[in-house]
Length: 395
Ligand code: ADP
Ligand code: ASP
Ligand code: MG
Image 1 (cartoon, rainbow, N blue to C red):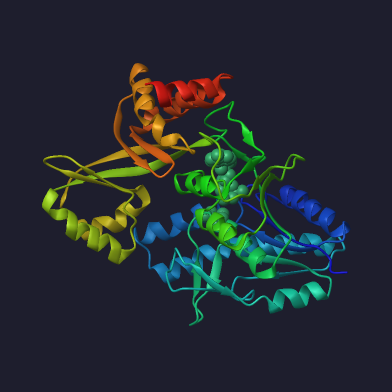
Image 2: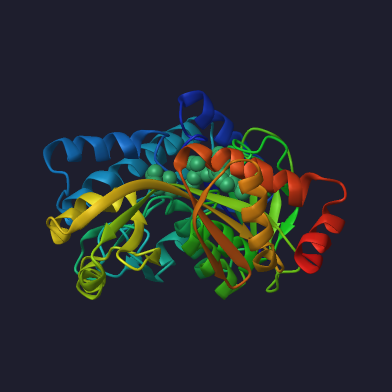
């Protein structure tokens, strides 16, 4: 009978020290001793990718994209080798593979590449030899042989893509929280763990800043119906299962996006700026239109790149944060949410409705309070359901 196959992914904090690598090895060994075939994906040790990025930026604020990928991909290679050394030493034959060695083929979009295809034969061959296989997350290779990386947080996507290609029984994302919560538990202390969350809601949460899962990983799991579970490396718990194609909860959560910036430009400059952003791969999150100016919202770390094309056409620039509510009835809560925040002396800069979500732009120093206020009003209160009905339908 064919052995079950699981893909386990361990994030930066989980492999952040040698002690933690031992803890990760225990999870892998437990699965192996249960008779499973195990493919592991690892991130760089926590802080390592930022450290490498910082080194490159000391030299050039917009480092050469190809060389940056060569540099950043080395972080995951360190983790994979340390984990393989650990497992081999513990008596479990293990081989580590870089993205290139695992045939993770991507497009040519350096720093934000998309996985196109994985030829899993080197992995299946190692599994047949009863080895544990560790693959470096966050990286792939182009048809020309250049190393690429998949965007920050991309190891989740490596894991899901491998699980899909290997037809794994489950893809387990081990991290430093024990599942997907109704809001980042570091911001809202009494956020609730969701035992199940559907794919479209998870995708919206990830898109709007819930970094517990990288957005492409959710989309890839959804498309290929990969059973996806988020769980803690440090506490025994069944975590959260991401499954289902329909959003059923009226409000399933809030997502925060810090480090955004609102750049005001002249109205007539907008078409050119949009075109140039498209050409250099900068995503415009939103366009805020006023009678005498237009604001574009982009990620702060895209600003150095954007400065190159804007060249003095910026009228004004502000740091902002975005708070997004996600759920089947989220849109209906937009008006009452803004009022609720205003009652608490929090000014909203802008709001935007989208399919089953609404986003509020705020000054960065009030986003945590705003998240707590909305979470308390619409999710925490035991009468949350009544409250939702009241605000959504009676106001
Ligand atoms: P890893 O290094 O394991 O990939 P990340 O830092 O990328 O971990 O993601 C886990 C973090 O995501 C948590 O520590 C938590 O602060 C944050 N997070 C944001 N939103 C949520 C949410 N809705 N549920 C759980 N965690 C969240
Ligand atoms: N190491 C990469 C990052 O810090 C990828 C990941 O952790 O998923 O973004
Ligand atoms: Mg992550």
